[in-house]
Image 1: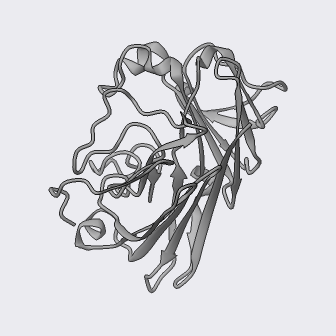
Image 2: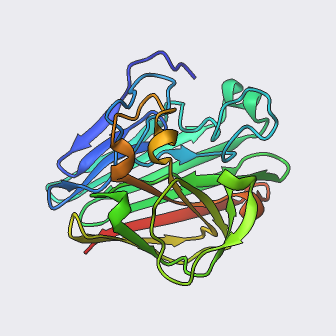
Length: 275
């Protein structure tokens, strides 16, 4: 695929979707942004966008083969095809597709088709489908790497993961257990909750709203904020950007990776609502 072409966008009153990465960059609810985008985010061909909802596929985190293939797979870096778009006054529906090519098979030797259906309206609805077009089964990791905008990460609470076990990426992936109360944040967090298929809610007292994250066929929830020092290592983050974001990602990673038979299809669904 040619990653040198200018970026293709679908824009409406409800938000913005970039064809590169099949990436929902912005979504508004009652005129207010719900998704966080770093102030120095790069909108360049072949570069992942820091913010919104990147699509992670077919591996999560660092390249598991340590072969220089980049973190979080290749889907977020490549241009997807806009299959259809329906822009209305109160909602926007866009369907995008990414299929394997010589370039993808050089990185991951499987034939596949990704399809993202996005509806931006009173709620945000996403459905990411993976189809195995190979003659043999394959395994993959996936995530909708959702960046949510918050008034101040130090003044929010995250419900839905009380008492759950997680792997702490900041502590050599050691297994730990979350507190029995809602999560509060006083420092960096990079936690992978495997077997966590339930809904989460971000209570944001600064913005006076609660974001509810419902999902389906997703067994992993990833929670991430780099905090002050970590954000200084991210070129796209401006000062204080870290204080206004929290990633609550829906996926299937690690022990929850998906094994897909030839001709089979797997769909991960996400719905975000605001109260």
